[in-house]
Image (tube, rainbow, N blue to C red; front, side, top):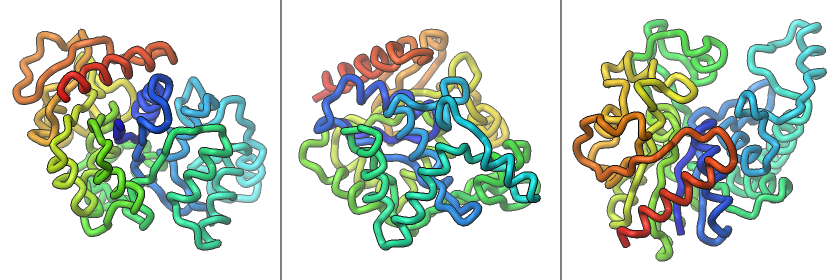
Length: 306
């Protein structure tokens, strides 16, 4: 069984590639919930929804998040009434948040709700939230401490990042914990998600990093940096602000001895990267075929280590 750690658009793309080439019993996708929050009275789980919509084949192809062919009547009407419109909820997407909120208030766990919504979209593969309890990421910036979505969406990542405050006192969800201990676990694949905003919140959960390392299986990461730039999102900006080289070598240094291998793009084949074993291939995923090809290469690579 391959355990994928994911968050955001890049993570969702590789997760979809893995789901395209692995049967449901051989893949589990654990998703970051550090950017979850309550908005307009609804429980919002952006990364879970991005992964779900991407695996369901309904994600907006231009944005990578949200639903394709979305309409915005709700937001337009809300704006006319003076409501908050900085975090946009499409009409079809809104149904997800309404149903999630209803189920959570009825006593179901985020794990159970996530599985039910994935099933409703025809997804057979396991999508598991990293935690059932709130585990918010706080961004310490030159403008003060900001809730994640205030930084990411309301302020469009403009403030300079000084540090990230994660949730080390929160434990992983029971489902995630069971996956860590699963005897069938073959390897851990860290998708090309933002290492600081999407992956670190997962690894910061109580005991997760040490327990995964103790399993003795291969742990590999796919670099989200190609040619000194982030494919999408603020990873490069954050790296520069934190004094980390904007390169795959910088990503390798950040993960340190937690990872055994790093997948980098052919563009960066001449980079001096110390520590992990390297797989050099084309990592930019422009199409579903690209996702499946990269996933197949990564799976073949890690399975050679067993």
